[in-house]
Every structure is written in structure tokens, then in C-alpha cells.
Length: 179
Image (cartoon, rainbow, N blue to C red):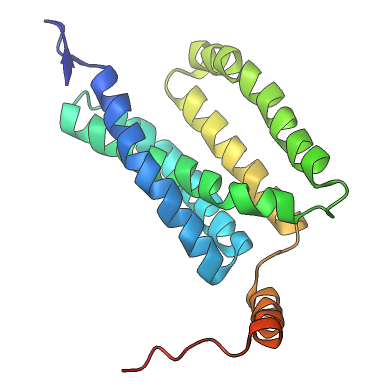
């Protein structure tokens, strides 16, 4: 996973993280089905805030192993956990008549902010060195945490119990898993 003779990590690191990310997104999405969207999002944004500085310290070691592990953790946890929750949670936040528009609006606002991120990251790096992008990552995690605190759960214990009652009413009790 080294690029030419320079010894720098190559795109192979990103490809490996993306491959792990496919499974991670599915696994995180499954976890939100069991425990709710909000708790997963809450813990992941907290993790992101705590991970921001150590993540950049590990990348700055220039150790290929440390970089690959750091990118893998960052991608599989910080990015894919949120993506796994968003696929179900964002549409659930809106009534059926506004669901597509509401979820699309959330993604479009995110894209507008994300579009400026490389420029802002570069400016912060020029100002504070590696600490600049780390602080930006921490700020984004804090904004995510704030949004979670202001957003309702759509698939918590009550919602899952109500869905189970509705299903049992329509189709009868679920088969027993015993045996």
C-alpha cells in the first residue's frame, strides 16, 4: 500500500477503508434497527469529538500501519455509522407527503457545507498546522452532537413496540425462536 518509491500511503489505504466501510455501513444500519437511530448517532458523534485529536496524532506518526488503522477506524466508525443511521432516520423524520423533500434538503445542506470543507481545512492547516483540521473535525462532531440533542428518535423502544403490535395485529404473532 505504498505509492511508488516515495513510501507514502497510496490510494490503497482509501480503497481498503472503503471496502471495510461497505460492511460497516450495513452493520451500523442494523444496529440502529435494534437500538434506535438516535443512540447510535449520539455515541458516534461523541466518539468523533474525542477521536479528532488522536486521529491526527496517529496519522502524523507517518507509520503506514498507524495510518491504515486510523483511516479504517475513522471511516468505519465516524463516517459509516452515520451513513448507516441516516438512510433510515432522515426519511423517518418527515411525514410521507414531505419525506422526499425533507430528506433531500438535509442531504443538500450537508453537501453545501461539505463543498467548502477542503478550502476551510486548508485555511485552518495554514493557520494552526495539523491541529487546524483536527479542530474542524471536532467542530463538525460537536455540530452533529447538537443536532442529535435537538432531533427526535424515530425508531426507539416505543416505536419498535408499536410496529410489532401493528404487525402482530395484521399477521398474527411472530413464530417462536425456541427450539
